[in-house]
Image (tube, rainbow, N blue to C red):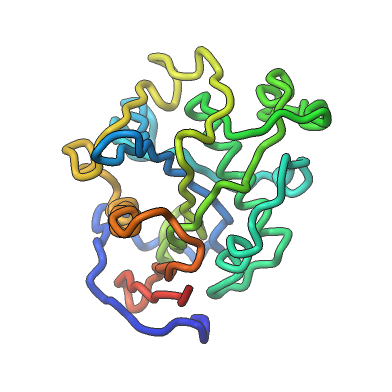
Length: 251
C-alpha cells in the first residue's frame, strides 16, 4: 500500500455473501456519486432501489455508480476539478495518473445522470461536444459535466477472488449542483425503479452493501464537522488475508 498511509483502523464492515473462489481478476476503475441534500436539519442522501430481477443486489438500495468508460477520458468539462481533489485521487496504490483521476470524476457524473436522470453540469457554448451516447442529455440541455463541486470520500478495492472486482472512488456532491433532470429514467423496468432522499441514519441505509455502509459512515462523520473539505483524510479500503482493512491517507 501507499507509503502515505498513516495508520490502520481494522474495524470495517465485511461482506460475507459473495463467493471468493474465482481466478484473479484485475480491478476495473469505477466511480460512485453520493448526492447530499443539506437543506434540512438532518442531511439526506439519494438512494435508488434496484430492480428485483437484476443479478447483483436485487431489490437493494444503492448509490449510482459504475465502471469508467473510454469516453470519460476525453469528454470536455465545464470547469476543471480542484487541484486538491486531483491530489486526493492520486493517493494510494495502485497509482493513479492525472488523466485517470479526471476520468474517474467524470464517470461519477455520467453514471449518476444515466441511472437517476440527475445531471451535474454547467451551461456552455461547447455543449455540442458531448452529444454522444450517455452524454446526449447534457448536450440537449446545453451543459457540460462539471466536476468542480465533487469531493472524494473514500477509495475501495474489491477483494481478490470475486468474479467482479472494482477499484472504486466514492465521490459526494451537494444536491444544489444538479443542473438538469432527465424525465423517464426511473420506471418499473429500469435498473433503478425508485429514487428516495433518505436521512442519514434512517432504515433504508441499514440494508446497504457493507462497503457502502463504511463509506456512508465516513461521509456522515465529515458532514458532522461542518462544510466538506478536500484536506480531510481519505480512507482506503482493501483486503489483506481475506479481511477488509482500512488505511487512512492523510489530508
